[in-house]
Length: 358
Image 1 (cartoon, one colour):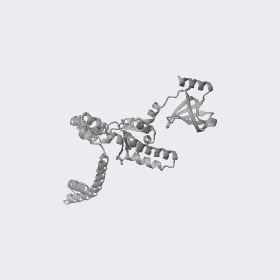
Image 2 (tube, helix red, strand yellow; image 1 turned 30 degrees about the horizontal axis):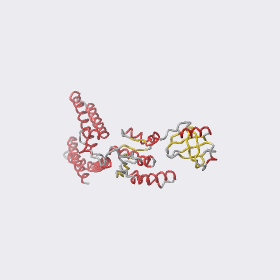
Image 3 (cartoon, one colour; image 1 turned 135 degrees about the horizontal axis):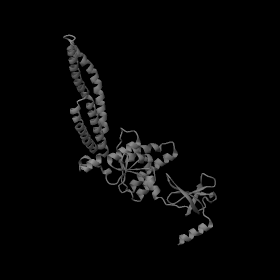
Image 4 (cartoon, helix red, strand yellow; image 1 turned 45 degrees about the vertical axis):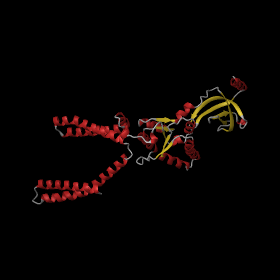
């Protein structure tokens, strides 16, 4: 309220002076300046109160938005924005001196505004690099313990994927994981989802986080909430930009958005596909068939790495032990590689046994 009342006082003084001058120029009588001053003060009192409250609300919102912005970005944005404003004035002032027209004044003002806005946006996007280039990282952009090293900032799709657990078990997450608090909350809400598949994957993801901790993989739950943003993907990318961490995800939308934000994102599904065994057509495998497939006479089994094998005309061999099959084709899925195969002939089995002995 102190800011609003102070702004209103200044506004009333300006309105009273303006009303006095208007009344004085009207020459309507000796009391015209006084009447004009009273009218100006009354109007500006009302308008000043409304304008003061709106301005105070805008300032509070600006402070709220900048509360979690790294100081390095604010510093770089301020410097570049001021430089852009000065450049616009340097370009526009000679035009004002030469032409001296209202149009030139508007062009100069627009040029100053455009260059200042451009400088602010460049500073907000490249602030971390600019601060590092200026040698001010230790002062303006200190990293937290969780943001050091090669930690991976993950979203709910990555936590729900089995690859993180495999990487952690293999010692391939030396920098650990950073999971924002809002991602953990989202996973907990998915556990209660009506879809049993989604609920089971979310529960498995939370259990995988606990398992990674037991493997001594550093897992840090970041308290960043980013309340000014509603979209979860935008929240994650905002945290990534503030911390300078790579994003680990299984969402193509997040990868595309990270590219637009000029951030580094790792698509874990692409990594899983690249690391999956390359089962070429004609390759012989042995698999235990455990259930029927979706199509008639199809049987389904699983390889040691968890990849599904769908075998044609093999329902009679379910629960019959290890069965020799020949690969027909493969298809990547969200859960790994799906292998389509047929029962191996006697000649195929003989060749397979001979190659195994060799």
